[in-house]
Length: 167
Image (tube, rainbow, N blue to C red):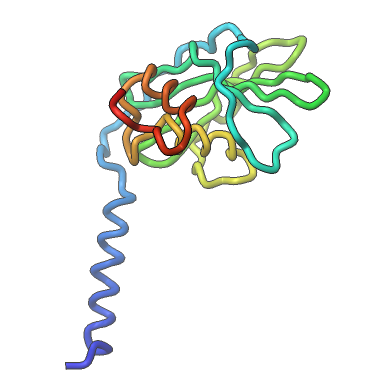
């Protein structure tokens, strides 16, 4: 028999399998209320490598937490070449590949909750290059949060070839 005859059916099966991998595994999932952002720290940050960025990014290791809802929450600090510091209190939902910014820190005014809290895709390169780096390099193990905040910290610090080990 000719392959062309079965190709449409095969494509439908593959599309269904791909759709099921993207679907939310728990339709009853509810996000817990995010705790308030912790005090801003600008020392002892875990540096992030963000190619082609004019800003230096670092994660405050003391802020890394995994909520009862499975959200990995943390503070990331962005420093410009002139020394201006901004920070974001964010969460990553590994199961759906999304992130949310809960609050932003601005010099002089401190933390301010962000308006219109909505989940955005991690692949949104305009707003989330640092967030995608955090997800890929420590926060998420595939579509699940990493094992613990301490493991997330270790993996964010580790060279790429030693991340996600059981050490």
